[in-house]
Image (cartoon, rainbow, N blue to C red):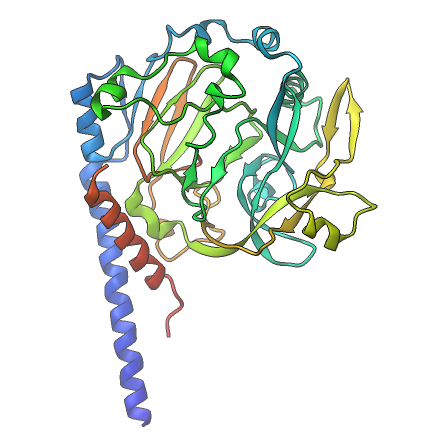
Length: 376
């Protein structure tokens, strides 16, 4: 019996080793064949050129591709306030002290992040608190925080994203906020990106606007849409991983939770029962702007409980939460300036068609989760 057990253990270890070798070689071969840079185009591609990138499932940047848009030429604080004024907009709010990522990144905060809750010691996938605020108040808050006049405050950003049960797949189609709550600004952008519309033979499913400052970052996630990002004002830094590096992200299944505002008169059980209801935030007035502080927010598990898969590894904090494959990852990094465009293919990870792509990605994900399990 002892001999039989030892043989069984040996066989499992051999299988695990084979899977690990296969995944490692797959990642390294992809990197060798595709390179570690993102193509930069100085003019917009033709629809045929775009389709070639789609076929290879590779991103590219178009420098100055949107430079002639009225939005790029005209948008500033005064212009946006005149267009939207006191109109209520949906604002997402996260603390800059609770997200695990922020411990080493100078007070920046993740949208939709993996967080260890100090109250119960459990690690959750936490979504931001959502609140409606007058647009001009929100814009002043974002601007003042960037200038460090609001140093200890929570991070606010605009663009609420509707989620699927797979938190790795951020679904924006139901949002379409530039043609919804920000429709007064829609005239300042092109109705579509012509080379993408012609190549894909359809209009965009959604056109979304994101507004935030340097303290707000998006945790590692992926979209199942072909995305074209157009930078209007300021600069944005992207960290990108191809789908073949699924094994590197250390995917885990975590309980979903949401930040809520603390209210001393409301018990924890009441907050959990009423988690879908807006809870008043404890705020103080700073230079005429309602400032929500990091201590005003707490993690509350969603009800009913939901277990969701999510990436726990952070390319910018590579030691923490790493898998046995994380060291193989070679993230691609790109900065966008006003007027630049970034094409991000479906299922690429960002710290945002083809049938064979989905099958390949699903296979690598399944094998990686198996190989990342502790050895028996």
